Image (cartoon, rainbow over all chains, first blue to last red; front, side):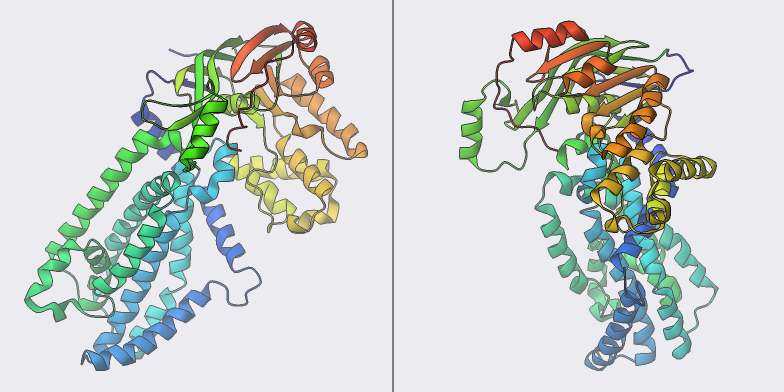
Length: 277
Length: 258
């Protein structure tokens, strides 16, 4: 069809080939992952420029939260602290990662407006940058989990490795959410505010500072909260000796829904983002 | 063979965040032709309307026209940043664009780090980046300042670095906005040599400019845009001569976003 010697860029508005272009965007974004990686590291470096302990501030504030909330809620909810503290530490760290990711996802495209309007980069690069940045940031909290586990003598068995597929699911959701929320919020600037409200509410509605068993026979209602299975597939293997298949099915189902919505939106509106930001 | 072919190419900018209805009405009343509401009741600015042209190998094209005529939008469309809402665009050849030299620069990084970052933006491998670094470092003449964050640079130093990075390439199709004519006199001489080399190496050049002297000196062909349409296309002298004698109809349409 075309001469193969030269790179060819062809767009025909009457035949936009949206799906093919969206796939090409994803492929290009992933193959230039080093750019997203470098940008993510720069973001963190610049955010903590001049700070002595840098990203460990997040770890430190989580540690303070864990100790404070742990002492209070283990008393309030009459929980054994050696069981409650590992639960709380892992939950808070996953939740912090998740909620920071969601709130940064809402601006991952609109904050890159300068680059989007000047350089023909795949949008996937901006979404990956957001995912990588949050992954880096979360990695700084790993020592805290180890400290809590060792201090309280809570050592998970080999089922802890099941947290790895859980993390993988989280990564898929993170990319889908970055693309989806990034695009929606670039177009509708109010959505970002709504999302931050929802996340605040979700913090209390999700078993983070409380344990799911406290709901008694109403525990099935938690399945309507998409954050619960997402949290549980990582937390369960680390703290509760694994999770049931119901949780896995729910987590996978929510992932499929989010990824599907993100894909549909991305295919349909990818080319419009340069006009939105 | 490198070529750029546009067939009925149209770009419309939606003005989403223009909430005030009175403002919308006023704008619509003033510029009834260019700002309009489309079928889904959004306000859109027709930035480029039904452009047809073919640029072949060896051509040096100047895009001329008043502010807001659509010159930069056309450059960005050719570069692949805006996808057309109507018509077809086909570009054969590797594109290098000098549209905004500062895009993607990080003020908290040193000059050297910025050069490496630019290499990543262009999708270069490690060897390519090392080459870019050596080339841009030598050309910018920044010396020890290369290891200082660019936040601390003077405006002139920033331009030097941006210029050195942006021009360290050898594309088949060169897209330029006229920014590169800024800079101090001592640097301009060096810069011009480098630009000349870049232009001569490219199969096609498209430059958006207000400066007739630049257009006459560098270009063989001129495309005159007015309010998003091509109103003249031909040898550079003819188009520019006609521009002096027939002024374009003034349009109050605003320069679209960015």
